[in-house]
Length: 236
Image (cartoon, rainbow, N blue to C red):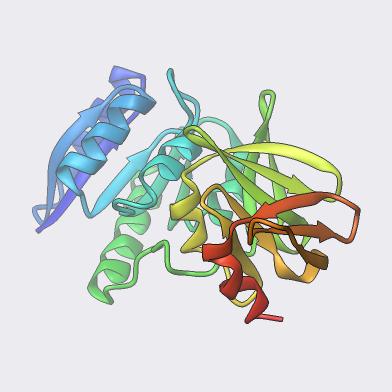
C-alpha cells in the first residue's frame, strides 16, 4: 500500500485529487494539508510515501516545504500547480513529476504509474544525492544557483545564507541537511555555522589562540575553529 499526502490550499483541488486516487486501491490517502507549515508537520509525522504538492501556498511554498523536511523525510513528490514557470525548479529539487492544472485523468494516471515504479525500485529523491544546483528565493522569484558558483554557506536560524560570486541568497534549510547533499571533497565545514568551497580558499593563517583565518580568492576572511581544521587542511 502506498501512503499519499495531498497538499493544496484549495479545497476543491484536494477533493479532486482524492477522488482520482479513489480509483486506485493500492493508494491510501494518509492526510491532507492546506498550507506549507501544515504540510511540514504532516510529512514529518506521517512519513508518507508520496506527496501531491502545490507550489504557491500560505505560510511557505512547496519548495520551502521540501527544504524544511529534507533532513527528516523526503517522499516521492508530484507537484500539482496552475503555474508552469516553476517546472524547472521542481525537477531541480528532484520532483518525480509536474502536473499542470487542469490535468486529464490519463495524465494523472501516468504520474501515478511513475510513482509506483520509483517506489518499487526503492529510489527516492533522497538527500544523499549530490546537489548540482540550489533553488533559492529572491523576493517573489525562485532562482537556480549552480553549486560551482557557491563560495561559502552560513547558517542563519532556519535558513542558510548562500554566498555565490558576490551575491547573497537565503535558502530555507538547515546547514546539516544541506551538508549531506554536497560533495564532501569540495564543501568543507570549517565552523559549526560555516561551510566553505575548498576550491575558493586562497590562504589559511593560524592565530595565537589555535584557530585559523581562512581567506577566499575574493578576499573574504572566514573563521575556522581548531576542531574543524583537519577537515580543510586534510583536503588540500
